[in-house]
Length: 144
Image (tube, rainbow, N blue to C red; front, side, top):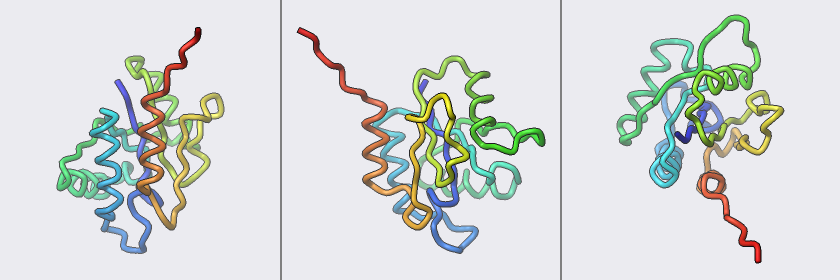
């Protein structure tokens, strides 16, 4: 299984409108999901409240996308990468994953190449989507 850990603010939402995800950014996510065949796991703080999580589900659903799961909400975790690592430890079937976030606290120290930083003013751009898709299809080097 391939997984994309998704933040919302700074990735799919760059405006001050709390209840609106940006369609152009969602379409970039959709392209990743379709081309790289990934499952979406919500790692954003938006997973913590039912109303916020449901808003994400509804708005992604409008574009034909669905959440596979959410990382756990534990009071003991204050750092996002710990929550992501815990989820990965519980899902051994994950063969490749990326973390898309505008905050460095999501970068797993032992796995820094899986982190794709987004500028909170731009979000998930087409160029960043291209980088992520390429990550899921590493080139195989031929040795003579």
